[in-house]
Image 1 (cartoon, rainbow, N blue to C red):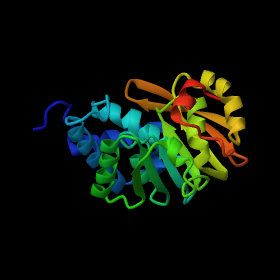
Image 2: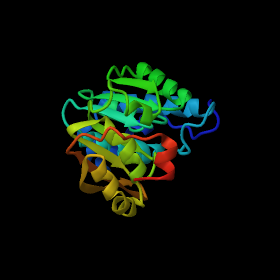
Image 3: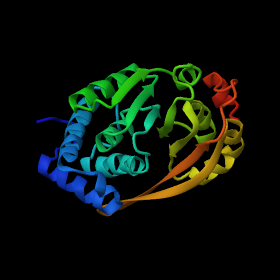
Length: 250
């Protein structure tokens, strides 16, 4: 028996996952095979979490709601066949759930922490997710790489930075006509207000915010998605070195 986290049986995990997806709306994306992959992901993540910190959430039911159902809301809204970059992928959210639920999209996961990128690569291989690649890379370096700059339909990030900073890290990756979709929390309205100037300077336009309500048992969570359209090329001066981005946001 593994130690250090709640144990959950496969059948219970899949049952709870199915119920959470039904309550939160994206049940159309879930199949038996995909549910099995989520169980395998849960088991692996919690096992690896004993060796180094991947997630502070170790209760399987909370993982289902706060990680899987949350990322499923994004997966539901991606264009068909989209080329996606997950900036600051961390423990693989939203990369891994999106790849499970949307085999038609490709996801490049980038993070500056080699251990986390290694975990995402190994987990994608174990789950048979051929639509995932991962790179150890700082986002501001990648945004200045001609091979990556302006080449993605969607750039997304979850729990990485406030929106002014995030826009400078993400928008350079997005092709004109594509979108940045920021997965945010309770501070989204203030961040949105503060980021309007930065978004415009970077070639974007704030389109809309969708409040995603996640329902699981007695717990309800609201995680807004902020949609930013890329209307023009990001000026060559951006992104700046991260020290400047963080100290002097646009």
